[in-house]
Image (tube, rainbow, N blue to C red; front, side, top):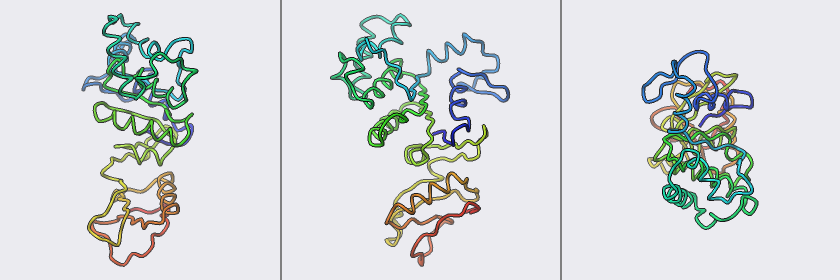
Length: 259
């Protein structure tokens, strides 16, 4: 998950990773190969072979059926008709839309339209899915369903998603990168910060594990405090290896806390 406030550089970073924008310094490695010498056709080949895109807007062609919208990328690459039909059927089943293949985009909901966009990204069987605010136009429940789908897909391929919703980022992300003014200010993995059950002590139900020795960003502090204020369960802020036995209620985390 790539997160941060508006203007922090989230979408720019995603576009650079997909070769849609160029970088000025540093390097991007693809299969341990530097892209510094990549030409336009190299990036085109990379996107065609490895990358599937999912955007906040669905970009579906209204006078085409769902199946035809999903098949576009394969037709442009001259796949056989039998291969196209087989792949389209498979990905529509994967996103739960196998019964909507003959529908038009105007006949389905926003959540279903986003599933079509995901199916379109998947039809080439890409190793990398780049998703830019895919839940931005959806209600919270539908958004959660889309995130659950992307989470499931991430078991077999890399999914890099941009979101401004920090709660979604930490709930569904295996790694969360927070940006501010184009720079990474926080980079953590699931094992470093996870909400889970602390089984060693009945006095504590939900546990937020904080990475030891890292200063928290204000964005992350606000997220943790939101969790504390909205839940009746005790949230223990894990500052060491074992929790104290005399913690009754949690305190709000201060911006300057260094666990």
